[in-house]
Amino acid sequence: MRIYKAADYAAMSKLASDVVAAAVIKDPCCALGLATGSTPLGLYASLVARYEAGELDFSRTVFVNLDEYIGVAADDPNSYCSFMQRHFFSAVNARSVNINIPNGMADDTAAECRRYDELLEAHPVDVQVLGIGHDGHIGFNEPGDAFVPGTHAVELDARTISANARFFGAEENVPRRALTMGIGSIMRARTILLLAYGADKAEILARAIRGPVTPHVPASVLQLHADVRVIGDATALAELI
Ligand code: F6R
Image 1 (tube, protein in one colour):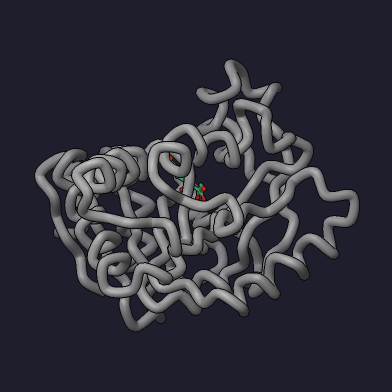
Image 2: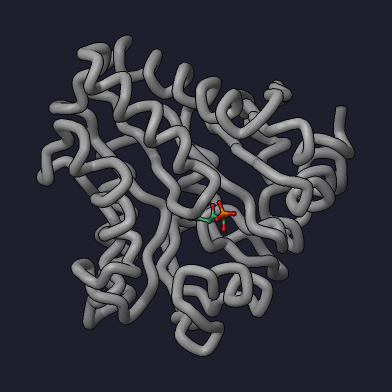
């Protein structure tokens, strides 16, 4: 693991954007694994700025998002699909045919998980962007007794529901279930960028990076990956370096 300590959120976002931009410039047809949440917003803004400056072309890039709420329609403003359109896809020349997000409205969840796993096999991810939850989740792989390899449905942890209430006005409005890419799929990405911002992530980040590898801290599995770059601001990395 390589750990990059950025002075602040803007510097963290710029560093992450450098890695993603390099991958797209090297191979415009690459596959990017993307995350939602607050942490990567600066990364997306930086990529949009580079696109607007003519530095990046996303017309052939494949996008594979980590997760989506179950029961939230794609056009609902709270869906991760809407989030990605708002903050990134609609602001660059991403082609809709290349945008992939699990369908949280699928009637047959098992079939949707299979479809997503097949898609991931067809498009191996070159760079996977991750945030980290306060309970150590990556994607929506919540703490449990085993690492789940493939795409699956999850019950969201109480801490995740509480953290995401800010997007829904109140905890009772937060969906209880989600579809998420599995740990095996995340680990197959060639390069993983784990982004962390803020003092409230310091303790879980230290447990994930220095603690035992255990499904009770899902992000700890990243210790076993050959190319993980942890990019955090000074407060998130306070317990590490
Ligand atoms: C989102 C996702 C989650 C978030 C995590 C951190 O697609 O997969 O794992 O990365 O919950 O969220 P923020 O960045 O809002 O603190």
